Image (cartoon, rainbow over all chains, first blue to last red; front, side):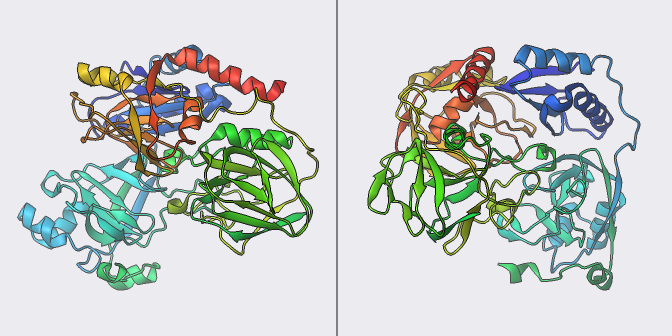
Length: 234
Length: 307
């Protein structure tokens, strides 16, 4: 493990740990995150993890670029991967249904699987949260079963309902709030993904693991889900 | 406590501060005043912390009426501001007597004006900041990111601050034609040789497709020859180049991660100048070394302490 350090802005350095997206990256990414947070302390403005990188944004009145680079270097010397499962484990209830997951038939057709089997394959895997982005609390998770991998829609929808669960290539995610979106929708979760009044705000954090659990319509409603069909939102 | 009634506003008139920090790993954007230099001077005029909540007025169309005696400060663009019938230029603190109106008519020089009040305007801090971000429903007067609206009140509770005017030396040079400085990023070598020449040797025109997320620059298309990239964190001022070759400077309300190749990132001082340019204006880009830019920035910040 020899992380590369690259200049990205006046007060930001990119720590590049890997070249490909893999679930095995995560124990290393979590360990590096912890070390960097510790090393920078209050000199840290933000630490932005993505699939293979950590962007370190530091206070330029406290550190100059040479000092920041040296701190990163020291912090990551002899880095060891964190223990597996050091992130939080979540179970997200999902109501898989055509009215809220209009791309279920498309995924079934592309994969040659029955819709029930598409659902089973999506919900049987424990996903890693690689990064949050696009919107507050929007967690990019993977990796989805290769047979379900599907490119984004050619034309993104103008409005995707909050809680919508989708697939793009080998990633899956749930939309925290109503927003435009181009992912293939397969269901909806009643979980509140981002809450300004919650400690830590976002339900999911980078490095957490997530399992989707199929629930019935009545369970979905009992959990506070909104079953407004997607078409009705437009 | 002093109050101002908003009589006219636009979706581009927003409560801002320096932005939201420590939450970008959750997908929350930075937000904050696009021209941080002018915001800082507006606050400096009143002896406020430099990042106290201000109103960012883009292009004009904003009017307030004082419900009480108010001390205010103005910096940044000249948007044709009047106190009743008296024109008022940016770079000063001033008094609005009860009943008097302050209105911003149209841009004469620059794009964004910053209005400050003693102690900053009152607003709830959401995730540590009152910066208004509509699409994230964070910040602003209501805490849900909405723009300042007609009929709402701007309130401040601070006291103190006096009548001050920025010296010619302190007044930001909004009309400077100096090139915008770019700290080169790691992907710069993956652009074609001709593109690397064109970046720094041709004019770039600000597109009308511009908002608080980013400003598109129009010119000779740039050619990226490297492999496709995995999304990674995006710093403020990053210049990304989508497949059409027209660079986009990413601003305060940008998404937190993205996968387009980048030339590098503008310096904070250059970003402040860019924020004052209007669509159609031409800019030049010039490379700068990170260490040099860092020293310039630290030196500039000293001005607020020494002045």
